[in-house]
Length: 396
Image 1 (cartoon, one colour):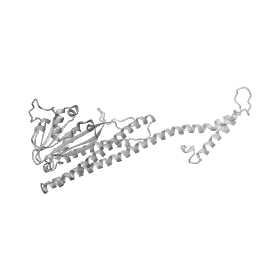
Image 2 (cartoon, helix red, strand yellow; image 1 turned 30 degrees about the vertical axis):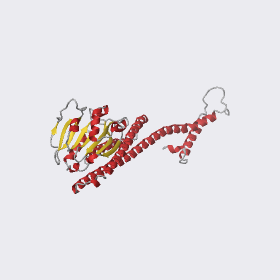
Image 3 (cartoon, one colour; image 1 turned 45 degrees about the horizontal axis):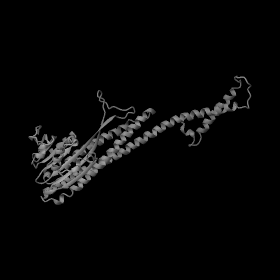
Image 4 (spheres, rainbow, N blue to C red; image 1 turned 180 degrees about the horizontal axis):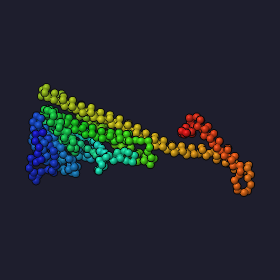
């Protein structure tokens, strides 16, 4: 980048629109880009035809600012319903339109959910649940983009709600490549934008993968039953995030598919010679490359979803096995005491007359001589029984 400035070039009057601070990257040479912080009013009043990246937050636009919305619609050629709740809440879209004088406009959106493991402020260690799962927070990146391009007019893209790392990625990419394609291809902005989005998607997928992997690694076989309720709640909540991430990656690949398809129609209309054709082909190749990366992220997320489902199935199986262990203990006690109880019932029948007085018979040994062997024989017979018998649960 050639120079940095934090002062706006514009002078404001009473007729100025609602203020909106923006970060601007404007081409100042073949590989030089001017970075500055200014107000959106300067961009909308400018007659410059230099390629320009404009980064802004959408909070002012969401709250209203009808004058600013109207100016942006005119400058970037946005559809009038772009401010509807449907558009703000969308998980992704791509649209484009061509206007007079070879003007071409695009608008598209990426939705990204990124996770951050919670760390203890004092020790810096990752906080965990009673079951050993890492605690975490998550955040949404709702990235919106609007571009306008014409051969002899403005060449600009407005980027809404992009995180700092995204902006840094774009700046770094612009500093390392030639920018000749900006003057012959309306989609010259898009590889840099999509590259930043892909970098953010990559961080998001790995942050979610780390949570799934930690869940797999921290399982143990000595869990207490009262921990399982929290564990299942955790797995259910994480499963929701995995499914949601798969959804937004599927939409992102569809957005890229539409973008690549629309860009393919640019080359046949080129009239500026082989250099322009080569530049446009390179833009298309870059878009194809990023489309492949997004597809890879989508496949990784699908595999991660299956892995997590396996983890849920394993946890359920082990919880059921733990319940079965308790039932085994009850069944074992029942089997041990049942023969003796049966023998006792026989001796208490009316066939035996011990008189009306309570007392301990000197022949009590007969009960034990019969009860103990019968109990042992019963257990041994059941243990040697078929695999489908109740004793398949016992290991003694």
